[in-house]
Image (cartoon, one colour):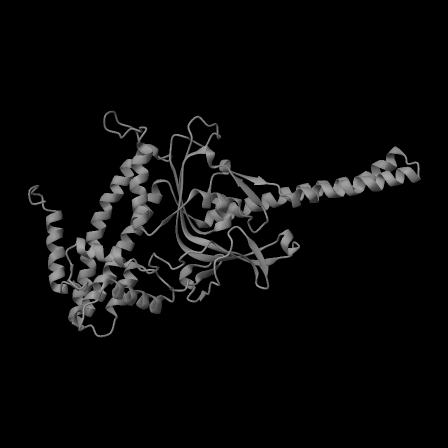
Length: 442
């Protein structure tokens, strides 16, 4: 069994591409738990395969990387560049149709729509509009290498104490639909204070999601405020989201701050401790009303100060939420669909391009590559080039090549791709058939 690879470490404001080395993971820890150590506080997700599934390389950079591989003649480089262009155009056309379809399905649910409805022409909202959109939307997320978070994991994430020591209580019963999808696992480093650190500044390391998509719809007939609607579906996309900050990325109606016993004790203890002192002094000396009031001022003011200290912590968290969401929000509503489809198209191209390239280069070897051998070779190549452990989706990539008619499998499981000049002709014929006007030829 392979060991669990490390999670990429990020300091707040740093991008994943700026980090080339990863920190080893010592094993899965209990969820929703902050532990004190010499290096600070750490929050660990449950045991997961932390290898990145999305290829963290731009499409253009990947093309240049493959073209720069040693042993390629100039003629082969020209053919490979042409192959990349037509393969990219093929996927772009395919995903453009998916983009148009998703936008049509989302149109009745879009809270930002400013279009005028046309009689007998505009798509109307129905009881099935939510499901008709969410099904294809989930398929697009899978093709972009996102994974769904189960509802109980979302609730655990909301209830987990954040770096300011605040605990939120989730109330997901307000939502008719709530789905969260994540991609990529990283580690966020922040400075924080809590009672566990005796309110001294400590460095905290939180396991986080590199990308997070939220789709939610409120139940009908709820009074949620002037800016909230229950007849639409809200979409949000964020980056670099710590697991314990899940409440930041859900509506405030679905989460409430819980006052912990330590907070209640800090508010009540000065008053409770002051009362015995006052009673004792009343027994040994006769005090005036003014003197009694003076004795009560100190414990009451301490309790009031503790209460407002809790309120200030909530306000600081709200300010941090506003600041972070301003810089960490990637897209809202219909723009989420556009960004998602662009990402899915990018992933499909990179997976297929890598699979074809390595099978094409291995054509002269004594025995053809099998699927596991292809997977191992590509993952080793990506690890060497990026410094990141990547879980390459080899089965999905090979299926794309089969669908395009570029590969076949022999009886022993060996994979054989068409020579690149023949592969170009196959893709060119498919492209011509796609855009030929003659309906019978299409």
